Length: 303
Image (cartoon, rainbow, N blue to C red):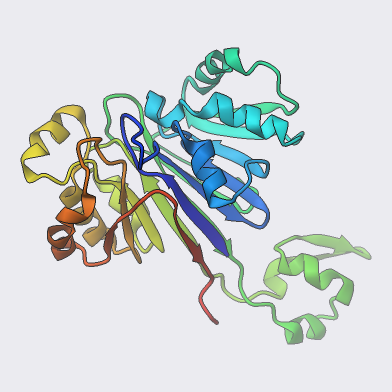
């Protein structure tokens, strides 16, 4: 199971009814945050989720609307008596940027580790998550993320019995662990079937439409993508500042065919995103104009 909450949907500046961009995922007791714009703490409290179990924060880039909420968020985590290490992932320069922001949050009861992205595509497995970072096309170095929860094959008890595998090892093998016991090595493939379909969510903002976005969103359960402008006449502004219109996001979704497309990162001038959705849905019918606090629980498909 994977819980997703789009905490903030705004770009550039917060509005009374729209916080700046951030998204949280929860799986197996671990939470992952992507971006931390102003208002993230308020949105999280309104949702009723805790910042304490956040083990990982991913940053798309370092414009203020994506990271300005971080110092306060770290202090809140510290006040929640967190002591476990926190990992941060982001483009090169992450440690320098965070260290500067921590001038106003210098003392924390937990250590921070940094993983700086330098390649156009990187994959990292951290806790229950497989994280694919892919570089997109903004006016600074910027990444999109695909968050996947893989699922092993079904456990075959009859195969385990036939191979005389001790019962005490079954649970570990089912979790994908290789075990040596009594001079014999047991591997997961001895008792597991073919890997089953897992869960995947992709997230990208602040970019022109590039093929890599659709590539990573292909077959995703949920695609969250920038739709900064709904007004057709603002295509020139989108190109100039390297952002995306709703229609361009929908075109990428049509190519990737995710279960749903949630548009986000709206311009402050875009007061009523729903006004443009009829035309957007002509391109990709499963498109939705997301709002702050939208959430979904994704479950593995029935066998």
